[in-house]
Each structure stands twice: as C-alpha cells, then as structure tokens.
Length: 148
Image (cartoon, rainbow, N blue to C red; front, side, top):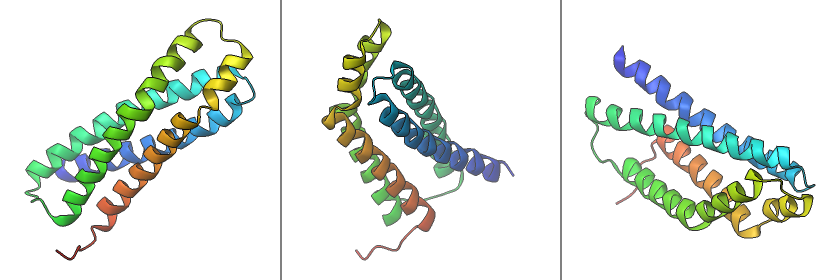
C-alpha cells in the first residue's frame, strides 16, 4: 500500500512537472511579444515544476530502497539522462534564470522581455531539458532491455 501510494506520488509529480515545463515554454512564446506578465508567470511555473521534481526524485529514491530495486540497465540509463539534464540546467538555464529574475524584478521594458524570451541559448536549454525529461520518463515507464 505504501509503495503503490509513493509510486503514484512519484509518477504524478514528475508528469505534472513535465506539463508545467511545457506550459512555461508556451508562456515564453507569448512573452516574445514583450509581455512581462507572461514571462513572470513562465518563471513561476518553472519554479513550481522544480519543486515537483524534487518531490518526485525523493519519492523515486525511497522507492528504489524499499522496493528492492537493483541498478538495472534501464535505471542506469535514466540516471545518465538525469545527469545530462543537470548539466544542461547548470550550463544553459541557470544563467538565463538569474538574468530573467533581475530583468523581471524591476520594471522591464518590452524590448528587455523580448530579448529575454528570444534568447536562443536558453531556448536550446529549455527544449533540451524538456526532451531529456520526457526521455527519462519514457525509459522509466517502458523499462527497455538494453543489450550489454
């Protein structure tokens, strides 16, 4: 009972985080027109997704230990993808988020918001993160058998 409840929290929090990241990206498309409110909402949405990821990861770690899992090939593949996600986050997204916070904290001009929303390096990071996150989810759901 506890295991299945924890698994449900893990799955729902991770799925909700993925949906929020996609929603955030859609909001940033609106922000390309200079709408500061859309950019601010996108950042808040991403932060909520980050909290959901932490909840999901914590549940995943607990599930690993109480479920008696071993380091199967699919789990190792997932961990490698998660490591890549962390690298993308730190290299491409964190610097952009710091700049975005500073710009949007004050009275951002329309031109500032447009530049922020159209930052191609950040866009690459955000889309890469969404793709990696979806790939991790697919590997964890499908649990493919890798030839070693």
